[in-house]
Length: 154
Image 1 (cartoon, one colour):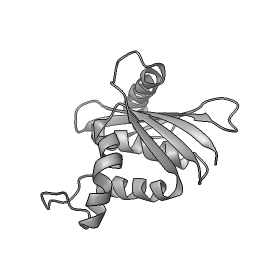
Image 2 (cartoon, one colour):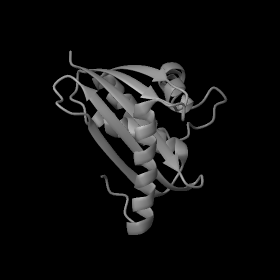
Image 3 (cartoon, one colour):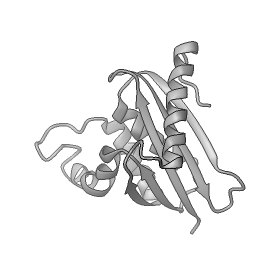
Image 4 (cartoon, one colour):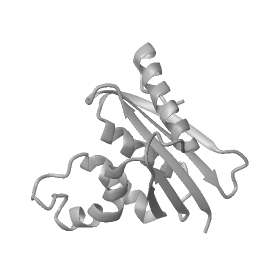
């Protein structure tokens, strides 16, 4: 089983507002780290955090072991504590309300079936080099989006 580290971050200018996501993949068979970022014009911070993880996992071949490193408690707790319960309740929270961002959580659940994901939370803006890099890329994606009006990947 190939092993990878996936570092992710999302950012939003206003919430909602223009947002950016970014990831770094490091691991087996890669000669260099893979970095990617992109954005959306009207989104939320939580959506960008989720999209960073989704895009990162989509860039890794299936059947891999992935150590996910994120500063998003929403993403980490969602993967490690909440997701199975949401599914069992038909995509409802414990309070019987619809799960927010269920389109992205459903996609993340699909990807979770392809990879072994080991989620790790880190404190944001705490001198973690890959987290700092992902944050800078996500913010740069917002800046590109404002200049061009397009949420393309970079």
